[in-house]
Length: 565
Image (cartoon, rainbow, N blue to C red; front, side):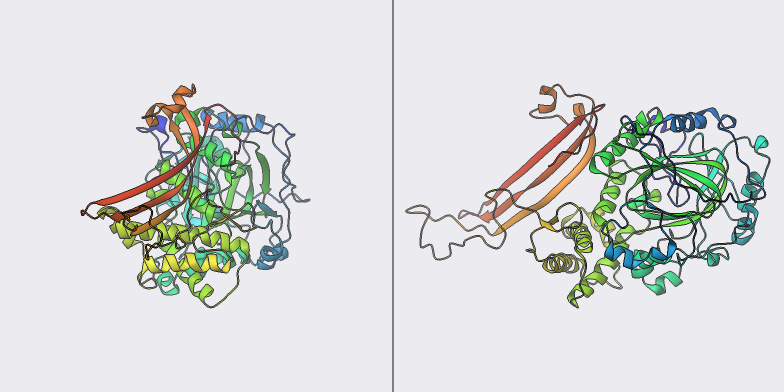
């Protein structure tokens, strides 16, 4: 579902833009700049063999009828060439946990279900109109309306006013407007919508959030969105908040999606694009390896996996129902997207609600399951290792962060389930790695679903196996024995991807400037190391620290390429 986007840097004093913006389900995105888009012939999704009858009150507009600024991006999108749409078309009856368990490619690429039969999903009747939506939810209900041209919020709109606008003559609409963030849980309309069976089986909120708190209305309300878009709406490049996955059903109308795979290089390009004002004049597809165009029509359902970057065009008045969900299949990318949101300063209002608290609930449940010797696939174990690492970082903030950071971190711990956050986080990490058959201080790495223990740098010392010299049998020096190190800590591997300006980050050696690099660059960094602390005989404290850093820098304008760290 899409929320009002954060401001573009070029227009901080003007309209707000949502980097997270998506088509209602946060499926329609915000613009992201990229290198040359794919040059393979354009291909679109296979459409049903029968053309549905038009819905009363809807209209198909020509590209030339919308506002000039909106038409600019639509025209650019239609002028590009795209990689073939090879995303799978599946039957609803084939979409379930059995598919996840037997197919290693499941939930790694978008899939399209052309007819909803067998999905275990419930939707309102196809004849439902936006006027019906207003009556079901409440005509006086406030709704966030987006001015598509400026991507800013239009204040003062109710559902009754929106229905009047939506059903008006297209030629009398003063502007192109969009509604993509109306969450309908707890309303009469919400009782008519049930997500697909697979979504309910994977969804963390559905599986792990306490039922009593849901009954009180205190939970992340992201599962039931109603999106109402008039013809010529455009949602710029974006990723759904926290990299959440999306289910997306078109009740009537049509949509055109433009997809970019969330590789490390493409995510870095997206971060660079969304964090600077180049998004105002650059097509993100020109900065990535390839873009895939997919057309959806009435009755189609799409499931979009973790982290996929996308933009959305609406050719005709369209009514959509969908929702967002986090799951245990790709926590690493979910956290990576969350980090991008933090680095690009996306306001908390536009991030996944109650994200950290939800992670604690999930961690507590999986810790119990692992303790009970329940078995999980390597794919889930790798995802849980990333979750455990995140919870350990939260626990460390509580232990030794600033007072403000401690306060916020403590508030995110659900004390009804988690009594000792530090103990739970570290126990979860130990149990996950033990279940994977590796040492507790070894991260679960490797591409795909295979578990590959992350190898240490040559010469590094594994914590807990350092040879002790308590008997002083072989002194290092003839007449003096140095004090033992009282605290030895191997710093965990830390991999980051960000966009920086060389002139702002170069301080000491200035190596980038010496290499002739300037301006905005995409930087990938890997850090790890070791620290030791001990007390000396005369009362002083000695600290020994070695940090190893590897940096890969890609100048702005260069074609991003995934380099091994």
